[in-house]
Length: 240
Ligand code: HEC
Image (cartoon, rainbow, N blue to C red; front, side, top):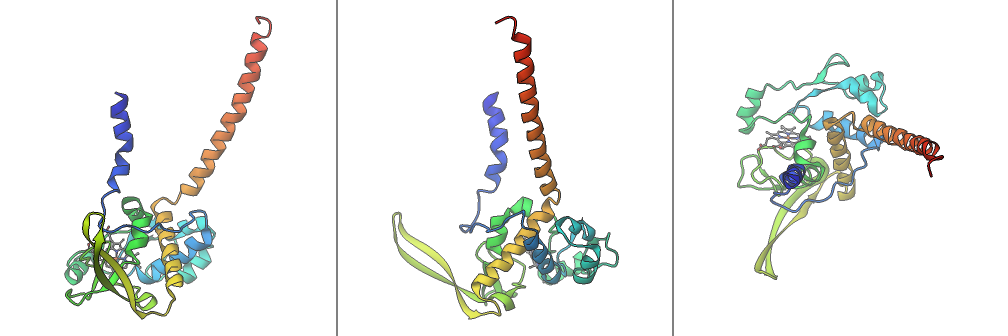
């Protein structure tokens, strides 16, 4: 019985384990609201034209310290009211014709893929002339999405080298920056981290409040413990 329970508890961990390329850890701080704000800006500028986030309302961003006016002025191109959800102008059918697959909704993508996967994916695009879209990806081989941030990152190429490893010949894939973009690699990594931080926030906007509430409950229990302990001492005083 306990073993079964343990198995059920561990199941979600296994789901993330399978992956093509080793992932880089996403350097994000989920309490950093300035980073989430920058990420939201990148998201509406570069992702929302193809992907929707239809379970996310613009005005929810007041959570991370933006005013409704700031949201309207800086983030809303596709919507008219601040209470609207982040839908997309491009119809799914047209998108499927263009890219072969419809770009999925990204509201909860961070929950299914995880932050590290997203961080690695958005830095893993490289030039591949064998593909009609001209791009490929180390984390998502033969992906249907073009590298929409290439002007910022520049163009990477894939270098495959072989060398003798512990288990015979090993193929090592590395990405080389063949042509620099408008950002340095460090700046680009920072931008992607902010974007991923936003995607993580969007997957669970109430996370910060939930954590705060959790600490509150623990504190309450601690106080209760002291009171109950004193009460117990009081009750047993005459018996011992
Ligand atoms: C030009 C349209 C377009 C733009 C712009 C775009 N994407 Fe995509 N994206 C796609 C398509 C098409 C797919 C589906 C790829 C596939 O399944 O092969 C996709 C897939 C993805 C996936 C993988 C989803 C999954 O788990 O299968 C993620 C994550 C993603 N996009 C994130 C982003 C982010 C973040 C941005 C903004 C920086 C962005 N995309 C901008 C078209 C786009």
